[in-house]
Image 1 (cartoon, rainbow, N blue to C red):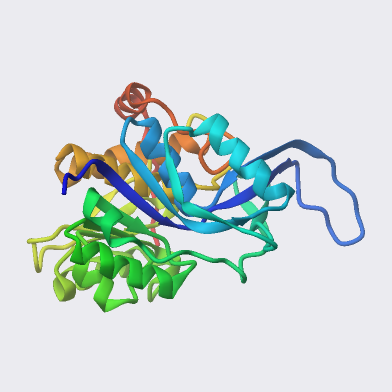
Image 2 (image 1 turned 60 degrees about the vertical axis):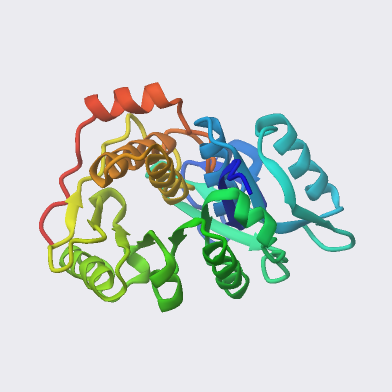
Length: 311
């Protein structure tokens, strides 16, 4: 079978209600909403949109939408903003609520989130025929068991795996070409030294490339085939402005996948992913700051790096 799909992205699809505020309201007080937006959300959807905008052929398989108003709005937004993505793997579940998330962004770029409908998330099984058409497969952990099963199907079909936040699953780490996770999900969270050690240890134990992201302090990458070599630190790039950090990790993952599809070495791939993620922080929403390839390249050449400082 011809591999006519670049990437199958599996996982969370939801509606995001984005608020930009000056500050979070204290209990019993009032604050104005400076900007509000209803948009496509979810880790899988954010990554899929970035990959499609960079010219890759993408199939999205994930959270079912309801046939409620939020579900109809979400599908209309996909038709408007991402019509090139194959959505046959995002089913409509009659009578079920569409998952949605309220994301509140403050001027420091941090966001506070409230969700509804995620407990009832329904992610379908990955069709082996679809997996055999894909060059790469990636998943996020929100539908954890379903994601494990989908990963196994994709690996059996010969698709290359990029796993996000599954570093606690040995079966995934053994199958994945790249395992990427946030430092907050690793032992010793918050310590750059521990993040570097963890990346190297997981690579040495399971064999795949391991990347631990540390937000504005950059990331550590331990490459497949370099057992015993310390993980390499890549500093974060300084965004031109920070509006909202929602989706930064999802766009970073998309950058890793894009570089892998292009056949780039790991160094170039990580730097591209870091630049794409930094630029995404300049807009409100999980994918609103996804920029064209030429703009990402130009930013990467011109941007300052952020000094992570001493621990």
